[in-house]
Length: 246
Image (cartoon, rainbow, N blue to C red):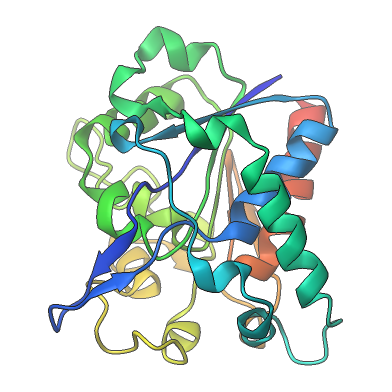
């Protein structure tokens, strides 16, 4: 099977106070699903806005930072995980020369079996602003492709509307990076949007883990969503089971 991974190309995020905050894609949210997809024998392509090589958020490969973005009491494998993230990122050619979202047409999307939207705060800066990405996702929905997204990858869904102006995921159960988790980041109060609030406003039936940073995955019809970086593994495993079941 072929899986298209869509991810942010933004290296910084423009905050409400004017700061251009260093950002990018979150390593775990790309590396863990990518590894599981390829180990399962699937072909994986990467696409970004403009075909620009994505930038990894440096905090997502910092072992001293990773302990703050996993649930309390979870195993401390931060140093080994960070090293593995760096190794995979450096050895993945698709990250060096990704496809341009704008270059993909309806027939191209038909060649893929599924779409996965990777996260990171950088996604706020470009994914919801791309008309071409919105069209790509409309094609995928129209072709009944399974879609998975994690954390801030959901921002790609915000600008979607159907022919009558309705959000196509209204009434869907889903999870995403929570407001509680945003409040303990160093960007609290300065972000251009709060994803939990935006999804709820659009009509999502939002849910989250009982504790911040814990893994939580929701499946509703052809949409699979993961809450945060720690959800990446469970999200990818769930998505692979769906693909295997057809």
